[in-house]
Image (cartoon, rainbow over all chains, first blue to last red; front, side):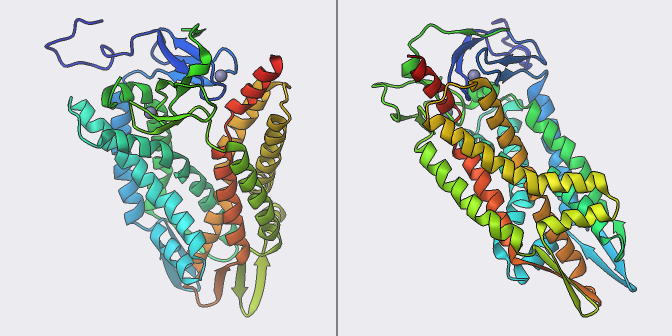
Length: 217
Length: 212
Ligand SMILES: [Zn+2]
Ligand SMILES: [Zn+2]
């Protein structure tokens, strides 16, 4: 376990030593997490909530997915996601034009919520993952990593791309009688972004990261 | 792999809500706070003022739920005719058009989920306040479900956004967002914050206290 020195440390070498103490976030029972194999999950013996999940190559995998996510997010916002043909008129829609149209119609509260959940939160989620993980991958630490990693946990529930796709699907069906709909490049980026984001957040080993960026142990 | 219960004195330990670090709290008061040595977040034994905050948000959401369903979330103006759609009529529209799998999903996301969250949280709050010992494992699972499904209620808000953006430039038809959408957005935010402010550990505290 403690033999790595000159070689580049891989995530396997730096696995969390078994026997660490944790409290169940749902029922507060103290447990010692034993040797969890890669891909394994430790659950609270009293209430069954997940205590710790170990993912193989968590750092590399999460970082790769976050970088892919950043690329897809950029594409999803740069191009129109739907075009509507009605009586010879073609209307292109990007995510931000939807938000702007809502603002102009006097519903800024709703517009802000859409802006937060489909643009601001996903972007913060992706970029904070990269900000925290990329330096770790290069064996460095940056000031502010702990602060950004805390922000990630707060922002994650408000990132709702997968719900947005359901919204697109429902909208398409509602417009079927009225107009012809042409899916745009951004729509495919959205569709790809959802599994990428979901995989990035489930492959993240937060305890492992905290042990590296934490201010004290 | 299977975790075993530690033998240290349980009452002095608290875990950081942000990073999970286990901190030993001095004094042992219920709301004693300190700062996490690992991430600097404030560490509380329990989420502060959890029951009052959750009640306030649940009541707010319940009050917003009524206008959210009464008022139209959007109005389609086509050839001089205006047709208003509420949350429920939007789901029925899909059903009438034979899209029953999608209608079912929309009905579940926008009608069932908000009600389920309100009833489930009210039930959890009352059971904790009464010091119930009834099935803490199942109540904890119910809380996890409430936490996970809440986001799907946003579907209707997105539908309004997309339709407004797509159709607003057309000459023959216009879609406008209705006040119902504002109230509905309020319901979604209030129920999400309510789920976040409820502390599931309270379920176990009361169960333990009653056990003696
Ligand atoms: Zn537990
Ligand atoms: Zn902490």
